[in-house]
Image (cartoon, rainbow over all chains, first blue to last red; front, side, top):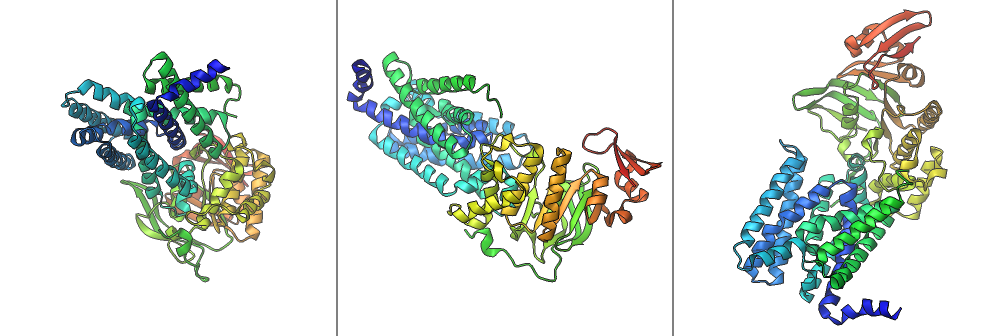
Length: 280
Length: 276
């Protein structure tokens, strides 16, 4: 018992671990909740594309801001919102298939990001941080930024919850109820974009999708109603973050990858146990 | 942002509840609905018959104000449908993701959202009203069931309850009877009779000519153009049926009456309809 306690408490003597844990919980919860809509609307590819497409924004913010956090977040956010709206517009109308168009933007933007970062002297280290996250390097200012963005997302989601649920479940109903479906749709895209920005430092652009999709998918298998699904998903996301962080501390694997792997393991366990229930 | 209820126009008492005038809808260059004109009075119940691709769903969506006419227009109680929240479109089952994690009561409550307004949570009255709507379709016992555990007939009745929760005065039911077994169909006909008393105007698209003739006041024969609209005796004539179904239809005179053999229905193969 005492040893267990020591294992849990010992890392907390380092302030960077405390900050990392707070960031992991925050990101796990926000991604877990917003991710429910990503999963239910089948927007996983959109989420992945969007998080990768932010890379040039991060790169510009990083190069211009000399490592300052404010410019980084603002540039990332501006890019995220623009790309979300652009992809949204393409998805609504277009001559190519939706996933083809998204793929072109996704890959092009990602390449632009890599190219920009490659002009920096500390190229490979920076790139790895942006791709896979650097939760151990989270500063208090990052935490504040993430809380503001994540909190804002949750507030908006709560305020328009019933409308978002309707456009996710039955867009035709939304239109006969004369809800502004297009604005709600773009609103949802922007919420996903801001969520991604708030989680950038913790998991990075390349692993972002896992935090948006895996905890909600696990919760989907366990629950019957959306509010419960969101709560369970938030819990799994936060727990996955914390457990992953401890694993990373003790085993010495990359923190973002550890968090994702814990969530994946939870999903597999739940999948095996819920198999009997199937789709009933 | 104003909420829909704030600007919903009042129905003009003299105007027909549904008025469709020279309605034409094109998807690109494909003609889905061609110069259709008709009017419905409050409480009318119409069966819409026509082969697949005849434009039944398109017509419904235009009446619901979801699709804009290419030319011509639709009016609901004397004004444009886009402003009304009193029109319910009951979707085909295949258009819904049944794994969506909501209960029957949750799904029916969505019909109330049009009357709630922004930032408002459903009140106790709304939940009570949902229960009442579920009682009307005899599903109050299933309120807490997840929607993927419903039978085909129950799924349709749930959507009718949602339309009731929406306080719809016009209900457009797309293939509501397909995927229903006979007891479920009887239950839906009981609900239609109840809606008749409440003066709800109803259009049902169906492939079943027999039921269309026997169960509805009026039938509409549609194949992009309006081929016939009125009583079944006037509309289901061999000439008009042939016009609607074209080469896909054969009419056979039997001892029981006129037999309609059509291969243009959803199942695609030689389905028989009898019409006496």
